[in-house]
Image 1 (cartoon, rainbow, N blue to C red):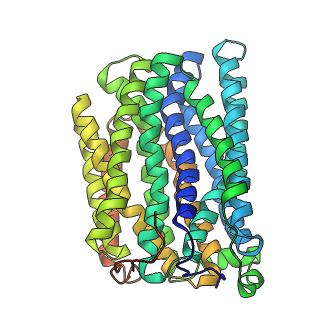
Image 2 (tube, rainbow, N blue to C red; image 1 turned 90 degrees about the vertical axis):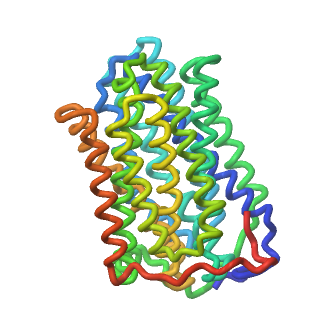
Length: 421
């Protein structure tokens, strides 16, 4: 166990810094979801290229996240967090520069697509180090009784960033141009990397954790019967996330009959509502509901499935916005349940490894699901991807209710001196 584990002396400022670093990544990703489809439409890139860019990055994300998580068990949490944020800054800066050149018609669409994909691959390969290391950092410094809630609090930063990102993107696109959000993201990523480097305290890693940090043991851990069901659930949830969020921008444009730039603004507002609902779920509802990780994933899937169904049948901006709020609320319940359940299923020495596997599971759905969703969108109907997502989510709720392995005790209230955000 890390020297500072369970210590009441870990300052709250540490968790706030982690929160801010993860929020930066959330801001950037949500801005990219809103900005990339209009970039594709204005530069002549086909719609499928947007999904392909995310998919290629997701492949590296899935392959490298467990490696960085395991390395954080041997090299420490802080170095991995700093490296991931630095890579994110480099990736986003390169992506912005390439997009700017592409919007000036200096690239053929294929050259632009390959160049943007290469820039995003930097994030997939190295930016994936931040999330598992941050999650393991929290696990190292909290008790099992409150771990799910504390992980939910810190990782809600991604949702916070997702809420702030679209709102900022909408204003920037309207007043400063399509690429302004990406320039801002690059700046924030640089600030985040420097802040983590100079202000995030290091924590000691136990000798037993270092000895067990062989890369091959990560995949053995993934096959552990107590861990595997949580990871299977996470992959399925990730696939649903990928389909819905990568089609929603096109859906707003086509369903509401607006221009790409108008669609970007409307999508940004709706995604902000969804992200705010996710924050409410993670920071307000989870501490008060006292549900087990299993209960969180069941209710999360039911609420998210309802949002997906409403998206499929909604035909106005108001209805689609409410649907996004339901989707955000459901994800805000389900994701911490899955993350906390996996963390509680392993020993303290394996927290970095299981965090890496959790982050990989969160990205696994982006490998194939986006292309599948784009195919349904183009070849069947615009509503088809969202109908399928609703069905999958309701089936996941049934799986959560019936699986013998997805278990966990209700979370307890945090003692007054425990760390939190």
